[in-house]
Length: 219
Image (cartoon, rainbow, N blue to C red; front, side, top):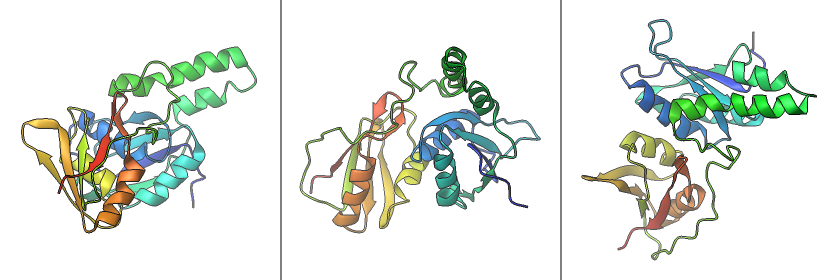
């Protein structure tokens, strides 16, 4: 029997060797491409190992994420994704306040706190801000099949960047720069394919404070 669509998606078959905080940051980076993520629940208890819940603000975002990321190789294990059987607590709180505007504002604010607390990355104000903005104007070099990334947060790792870029055709590899956490190179098969990824992810925020800047690498 199919479970009805839900704001919350349930993920299992996650590599349980990954530390909880790194896993939550990576899930946030991966799923926030589809819409505003308001909570991520991941526990390392025996019963909950290898599982997580991701709560989206919009139903369309959770549906899109489920379709696009089904079987995605997250830390080398294909994710199994389905709708959660019940509304998450934060969504239930928001839904339960329709018609009462004062409570709604207050509860919406509270509902968005878990992600801020768990990731310590969400801005305290304006939590409805888009996760990535294409408004960033970055001076560029001539087209190249290698992209240069800078303004990356300290916790960036190869897996996070691979998850972002390997959804684009022609992706080959991510190359980190030893000793420099804030820059990286990403290689594609052609400069055209690199350009598509560059435009799509320009200004993407892996964390709330760091908007990624992407240019073609110098030849």
